[in-house]
Picture 1 (cartoon, rainbow, N blue to C red):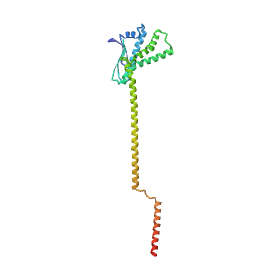
Picture 2 (picture 1 turned 90 degrees about the vertical axis):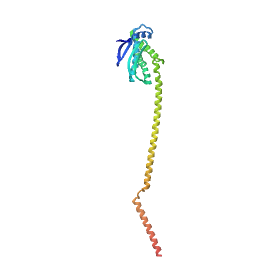
Picture 3 (picture 1 turned 30 degrees about the vertical axis):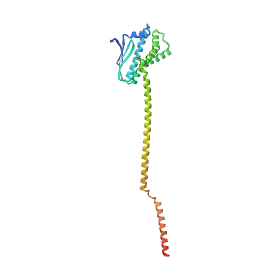
Picture 4 (picture 1 turned 30 degrees about the horizontal axis):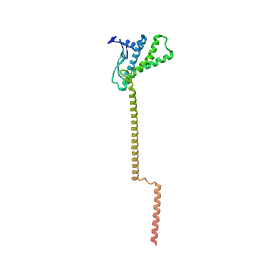
Length: 238
């Protein structure tokens, strides 16, 4: 159905995929005004694939895809949500990543099977490799409104996040070491207090003398006493 100049050609998980009536004009212009319907169709396919790559990451981060559109200036993925800076930058990479997967697959097939003999398939093979590669590089230019303007900051965001994580891990390790030292000191203090308490109890309650030692001391004491009494008795007799 044609609405506001767009024809809905399908839906992807509920989100409409729409092509504007001006899309063929854009296809002709972006393909160097070539008179090749296969090349135009391949270009439109690349644009749809690019925008679906954005849509996949939009859903991956829990946001809502409103529509995927193709028009004379390329295409766009309309979506709604409140992304973080990292999510917004990652979503910007989604389009070229989807194209890159197609480029790898097409390159492998051509390397294994060779270039197709059919003119239409040959044109599509060139579109999915050479044309696709040029579109990827063009989209990654760091100038608005191209994806590169929002995509490249992801590298700095990831680097800063890595530094923050390393700083956090170092701080957590230091806290753990400090806590272990405090626990060790507390345990040593408790052990010392217990030892001192045991010594105090030993001084207040001396250990009981073994029976053998007590009997020996008693015999010595008796003998000393008998000797002293015998001496006193001798002195009285004198």
